[in-house]
Structure formats: C-alpha cells, structure tokens
Length: 320
Ligand code: DGY
Picture (cartoon, protein in one colour):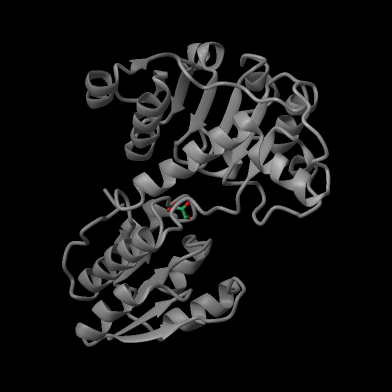
C-alpha cells in the first residue's frame, strides 16, 4: 500500500505509515504541485495526504476515484469538493481540535500586535527611526475591558474568547449558526446578530469556515458598520474579507487596524500597501505552526490516511 504526501511533514506522522507497512512518497520541491502532477502521483498511490492548497475538485476526484482516503493536513476543507468525494465514496480526513489553541494564540497575538502596533515599531527600529521619546507618536489602544466579537464560535473561536476573557476581562459577543452553551456558561458569551456583532465589537475575530455565505462578507459595507476604533482579525481564510475594501477602510480610518494570518491571494505580495500601514500586522498563514501542534497534526493526518487504506472509519472525517 502507498501514500503520496504533498509536503515534508513531521516524522511523528511518517513513523505511523512505516509501522503500518505503508510505502511513502513525499513531494519535496518547494512549490505547489500542478494539478496534473498531483493526479500523476495519486495514480500510483492508495491514499493522498495533502498539506497546502491542492484543489481536490470534481475533475481530480474523477481521475483518482481509486483513492481510499484523502487526508488533509489542515482543519479547513474549502479546497475540497466534499459532496463529490462522498458520492464517489472517498473519505476526506482533516485535523480539527489539535490545532485550536495554537491558531487561537495567533489570533490573540495579532490582536495585541495590532492594538500596540508592535510590528510597526519593530520596523521603526530597523529603519533607524528610534531617536527620542515621543509621548504622542504612534500610540496604541488598550484592550482591557473591551468587547470581543467572535465570528464563528467553534473550537478555535472558543480558545480565542477564553484568552481574551482571561487576559483582558473582555466581554464576549459571538455570531454563529448554533448556540455555544459552553461559551455562554464559562465565558458569559452572548450570541448576537451579525449586525450587532459589527456595531458593538471593539475587536472582531474571524474563525468561520470559508463558504459561499462567508466569502467576501467583510467588505466596504460591513467595515462601514464597525466602530471607528475597531480591530479586525482574520486567522481563518483570506477570502472571507475583501482586501481592497479592507485597505480602503484602514486608509479612511473607517476602522482602526487589522491583524491577518490569512490573505487573498496567498502568498501576499511583498509590495502590498497593507504591509506599510502602522496599524496592520500580517503573518504568512502560521496559525498551527508550532512544533507540538504540527506533530499532532501529522499524527492525526496519518491515522486518517491509514484508516482509509484499511477500509476503516477515519478518526476525523469530513464527509457526512
Ligand atoms: C487549516 O488547518 O485549515 C490551516 O488554515 C491550514 O490550511
């Protein structure tokens, strides 16, 4: 039995394949595979473990309908045509839970960095622009006692809310399809309409999946409904906000700042104007990037692929 892996992943996951007697082929080039290269490799494999943004669409699934599992090294599955995979009987695995805290930590870090303009001040020193003490230059905002609005309160949103409550005694609002009883009980979180979330939050942190409903939802109109001192944080998917509208909202001071771990497109161009703004912090999609979390993701992704190869139910499966 064979697995094709689209990136170099931690040994903790590779070991499980070896122990299961599964032959590993890993893509080691530092570029995304073309769709044809992916298909060609998958034709030689029984399962695919994909890290990165490979498109698992109907055309790919048709060519590779023999696959016994597609295992994502990610929690998000917006790059996969799940209904088509389900129709063809291909189980799709993903890695929820194990990355929730690390990803929420990046949202928290971006919120703080934006509020205190930390990345900007770091750049100032590098540019030789630390000459004397200026009490009024480039000052930030306090977070203590402010209101966090969580857009999409799943596991990651919960961890972000917990950190904000613990560190800054923030009030928690959330907008979600379903009610989150745990957040309401433990964090006194309040479920509100999207309009209320926009109008009442000092920080809005996006933790929703990318779907037709959420695509471009944060745009000129919705930024316009936020507080002028609001901070927008997105660690979910870049396509949930409209980047041109975000830039305009920041330049026109419609909102105060933004912290992004996800952009649209990715990678972000190094000359993107957003990078030059003092109230903006951008990271290159590193939400789950800690040693411990990546090891745990590798283990779970390997377990998903191995279960598929053995015709067993995947431990964390996306298909209904
Ligand atoms: C995830 O786990 O979905 C990350 O964003 C990586 O794609």
